[in-house]
Image (tube, rainbow, N blue to C red; front, side):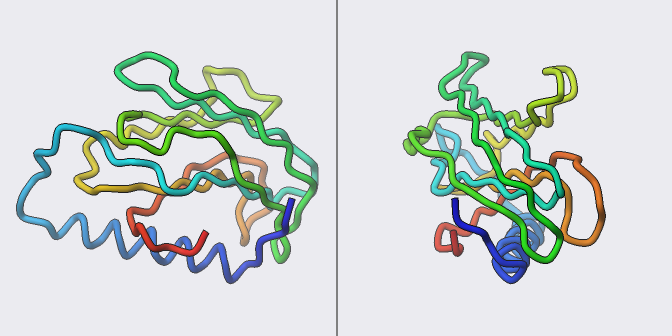
Length: 149
């Protein structure tokens, strides 16, 4: 697993923020038949303990992808990271769930991306944050199809 720099996180977060703001200013709604295709699916660990991150993709309430990714211990200035493989890249999945190895399914994070109004979406599952010592899980997303991975 390669370690991802703080700069990569900030770049991904900037693209996420800019895309979110751009999406909020749209006056028309998306009327496409399919949710966006997934172009990137990664994870980063800012916590000083190693963790296994679990993800689940669902389409119309049915599981279409389930994977675990072991992340080494990281730290705010130098998180550990990795990428999920084998996820469906065609449009179709519409909800992503993420949780740590020591969390129950009831504690998992959920993001419904079926109505994003874009052709593509990328995900980064974070354990902890670059500026706060915590092991909370969050799901970051970008709709920039050309974002750095």
